Image 1 (cartoon, rainbow, N blue to C red):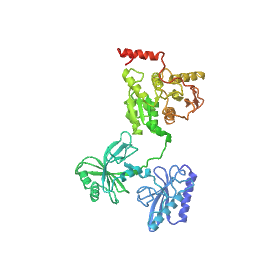
Image 2: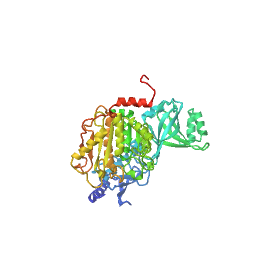
Image 3: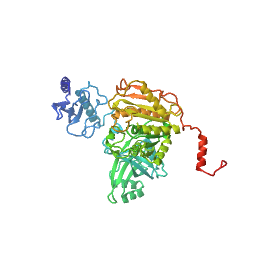
Image 4: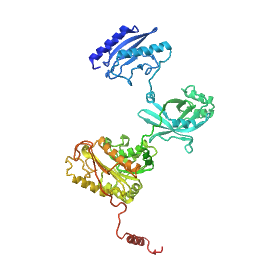
Length: 568
């Protein structure tokens, strides 16, 4: 408490409360070991004397004081833990700085005296969230209304095989049903399966016909419960088995989830905390449903490409072709979507695993081809065919040679293309989208952007920053930009991509190229200074027309298949 006058007022208020009420006695003020102001006091309720402590937090009066039992016992159902603080009328969710410690003591007296007189828990308006109730649980089984409906499909008195998916993460184990019934003919399947890296574990659901009176605390109790309800075969199998299996006991109202493990003759049971985790409501625009059928090529899985790919996966894109021949280095972690698990791994397959963590149903093809590098013609051609087969091509390399290859694929196949570049020194970046027969072809668009730069009459600062389309882009000294810089540009590129896929006949963007300023530098007069660029009219998309094309094709066929006449 950093307000001495308020501290003195608190002492006076508690003293006045004690003078007026005989139930408050033995008030003694002290400093706790952590230098917090503390008041020990006793409440006399009926024949009982209840020792309590009022503790003022460092942030008082902006944070609520606590009242705790000094003898470490449970006093009320309105208490956090066995020996924790009392949950009173004045709490963090309704606290105001004008509430005093004396008012907290009065609230404690009302709570404890009410429960003493009635013998029942005092009425409560306190709501505990599911996340609060499961805070101390290491082993968690998540279920939703859909999963509950799936378990209800199992008839009473019957058992059904099932599968559970479980992740071990951050010191916790989180499990949920994957499907009920045989894998090739399930009676229920979870729509939102856990992502990449989840363990698949065998499970069985026993639907008991009567309401469970209590949960089994040991393996022997579980076996006895199953035998009582006619599941003798299941109980025998559990006794004879030596593998790990989840047993879900369900009566239509109550649920127990236990992991049975250990060798035959020494089987043990570990109960999981059941956590209701309803599938969230719709968070995406209904137009995004189109994205599930889309396939996007992301060429370059570095800082920009990795973020864009994950953002698109979160938005519902169902298929990806990821192209990158590089290996993730530890230095890349300052702004790449990947983490230490992927260091030393090629970026494309590592990013594919990340996409499966985010969207387990997405289909990903990876290519570790060095586009524009020394690769075999067959390898490059196969990679280019994979890119051509996509609905959208994204160049996230900022490499001129790779750009030229992507541009050629997009033009020849008449596929939309997006690209971006982050400018060095935290200056900002550029994002571009091109639609066939609406916007200019990629090479023409780049020429027009470079011409627009030149027409501004402002030289790029000579401080070693990366210039737009600089010859050294992508090689040599790493680009100076932090994760926030890259994230801003990546997010704008993702918005372009989503707009193309979700709204192919319309767009929310009046321009197809935007410069995004993040600092006062070059053309930008302030952070978040955005400059649209009008790319002008479209030119010719599709294979480049060639003079004498028909005659040349006829001669080529004649050379390839000599002896064949025109009639053939």
